Length: 474
Image (cartoon, rainbow, N blue to C red; front, side):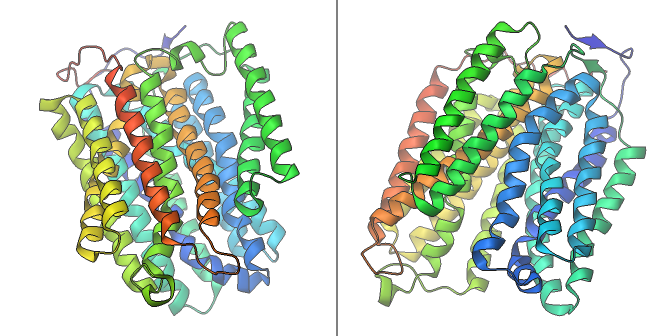
């Protein structure tokens, strides 16, 4: 049962959204900043290329566990309160990483940074606690655009500073400085949400969910390295399935569940969550694949363009900027067309882009066109999917609903990373260093099929009549 803590007051949309945009810009900045520094961190700590992959993996595992828990606690105790805790954790992790004398403490810092992924769900919940309708959609669009641009700025600045400054400690302190400013903002300038759900905490449900996410994500991580035939991978996947079944049985029986599965399975929401999972598969599962394809030497591999990292970064930057444009534009398109139509447009753009890549991978203008179309489609989906979920969820479950969206994207990316890796391996000749072009084409065809499934399930999604005129609530 929800509870409203304050009487309705009129507030300007900018009061709620303005500073949150900086917070999400910081989130993107942190996500992008470390990536070009991973090799330097490995050299500084004297660890192997295989070991340094845990720098990314452990943060992803921690994010998978912390997002649904902190999002639900935000619904119970206040979204600003949980956002403060999440930012403080990421700040502490950044400081630890900067001053860590060894690899173990560096990994501890990355685990502490897991709550970075819950910032967006909590921010969307804060927006929806005070703003509704078209203004709320614009706010979400601003957040997603800020996230995308922040990641782009972080990636560029991380690479530049990592090259220009000899002290890696100084370079790694930059995120801590930005996060300190972010902490000041969230402690002084952002209002708290006004609606609370039942204060009862489903400890058993959260524990089962956390163990399931750990087992599944770790199992899929292992599958990328050793394939699905590994005994450890099979064991972890079986354990995760058992935990998932136990979680579902428990959640359907408990009076106040950690996640309301009946809400998730409602006709209004389940197609959106299926689309979110598919979106995560393609968005995260193809990131490294695109890079290796563009970098491949056409004379040696028979495909690719032999681009150097600088040229590839232009492709990445262009896609990111178009994604920001799509996220910014989605509320303006949703007003005359409807938000469901915008999501269908985003899925359609993704289908077209992957068809073009599968058929025209050897023609550079077609590849560039596919990247542009795909970037716009990604932006529309990045903005519209969480916005619609927040609108359809009850006001006291906005945090956990958008948290589930984030978790499904993460799971989708992990599943795709393992499956796409197996596909590329199947098309790699014995002793060859690179996969055959058939592997890439197969992956793009799979992406087309996944988005076609998403398009079809969206057709049965039932959205309540929209009212974009209700813009300001409490």
